[in-house]
Image 1 (cartoon, rainbow, N blue to C red):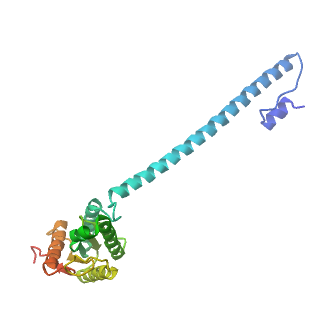
Image 2 (image 1 turned 120 degrees about the vertical axis):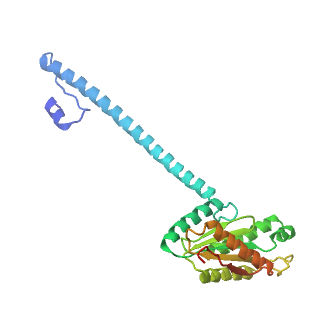
Image 3 (image 1 turned 60 degrees about the vertical axis):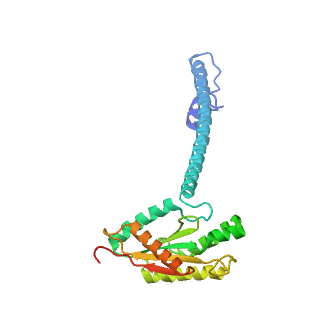
Length: 250
């Protein structure tokens, strides 16, 4: 038989004292059993509430994880071109600002290249917009492969224009990368029989390089690449060229 002392030591509130007397001890036993019942009931309720709270906490954590994933996806979508998967203008501007600030302190060069698909409107008119989208993706892949370092960025700059940011890359290295991209596009041999330059898809690339300083801005760098691209187009396209940026110190 369980007595009050044994129950106290066991800390098992499901037990009951078994003292059937009509004296003071019996009355205390009944009160003790009633207290045990209340404690047992409260413990059961506490365990239920704790389990419910744990379950709700787990759901809150799951919702937080889902929100974090959703926010990360929204950020990715807000900074990437949906067709090519490359960075968009928003992400590009952030990248250029970051690279400009860092390299202006280190004194290292910053190169950008502006690439444009030659006679892309003629390609779309001839093969259709779906084929045009596929061509944009293939050019984007070539640029992604060229932007091999974590510090590099390939972005879609306009309809058929792309911009590659190459921090810490000098003019010679940038020109080698441009040559490699052009060669890769030619090797893809994407049919373009309306192209006056060649019977396949080609691109023109303008390159500019500068060591960031207070005399220049990021816009100067991009404008120089745009000028280099213009000169390549003037000379017949399907090529690449470099534009020197002049500063007030020169």
